[in-house]
Image (cartoon, rainbow over all chains, first blue to last red; front, side):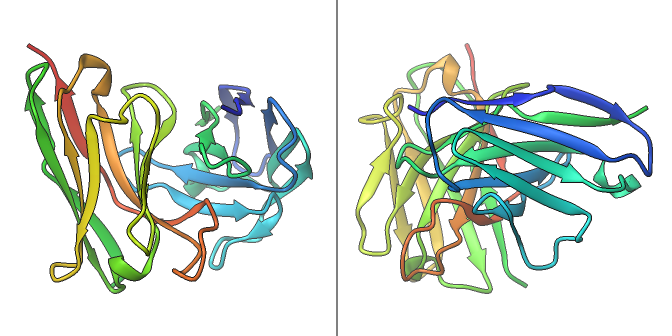
Length: 107
Length: 122
């Protein structure tokens, strides 16, 4: 299976900060990467697909970049609603795998 | 409203069986690739199973032979039959819709339910 490694596992930030989360794949996955946001007790929400395509309805402060084995999710100006856990997921392989998650906390 | 609502979780002893349901509204389960994804307490997400539009099914290795994914088109509902449950099956189980819209599988998920908790313990 393709292993997905996210860093950091926890991130403390303030409203208005620029936040960057990294996701690394154990092998080349091209652009076959998605990002999700998850809040406690709620359904995960798709943010980004194909590494950099913004899902409909997702605020433009979210952006994704990267290809191959290294990817980033950036929140340009952190808003109160953005405090949550973020996961990456590869879909290059039929055996879909996720990163361990990055929890964005209030500083 | 387009949504997925899971049910059927609970406390079950090791070796027991449980059937999870995922009721869909606002779209048709049978014309979409549908998945189960789980999350053990304090852990990341793990893909469990998929059912294709054509009915083909696939599983992650750790549940293959123990879990069965199916759907009831008349009820617009997805199921996961879980047998021979083990402690490491303890997790919140989510159903999730593939973003491909039914024509093909994209491999990522554009709609998720809130999940149902399965606890395997004696």
